[in-house]
Length: 216
Image (cartoon, rainbow, N blue to C red):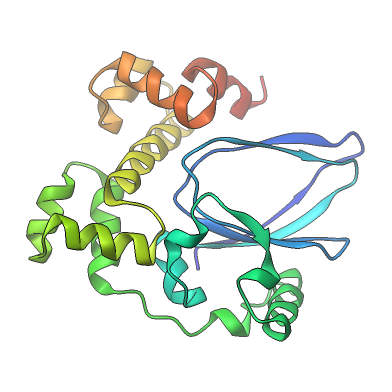
């Protein structure tokens, strides 16, 4: 697992911008609705009604397939009722335990392939290529792609792309440097490349996205 999270929409509600982060979420609403959100490469604008209260469990990139015992690519970009990914009894138990802040019993036993775990971390941190990581592991690019689709629901190139985007967001949230410097530090070819990728993944130009994240 990666983290627990909780959100309240307030009296006026809000629209939540959800950008790709390579993870999956089991989301439980206070009215009992529960959904599973798979990894995505597109921005989602999620309307939250006034007073909405939700809690979620976020799964690490490489944990999706092993935790659910399903080919992860079947859930890529999907938002489905939890009952569609877990048997009904286990789904009810998982929903109750996520709301209570307890690691759900149905999701406790999993074993990600250590090769995928290593590859995800290397691609996420940058400074390498998919081909180089495949060479490190002693597997062909095509085999690494199959492993990633089964475990993460994403291709190695997609994980590398999202990791670069997330490195930009982290640096932008924690430092005050120019967009050109942020682009270079995150691994983009140049500022124009950064602008294209941020618009594609977040739906806004970089400056507008950062202002929104700061609440300006």
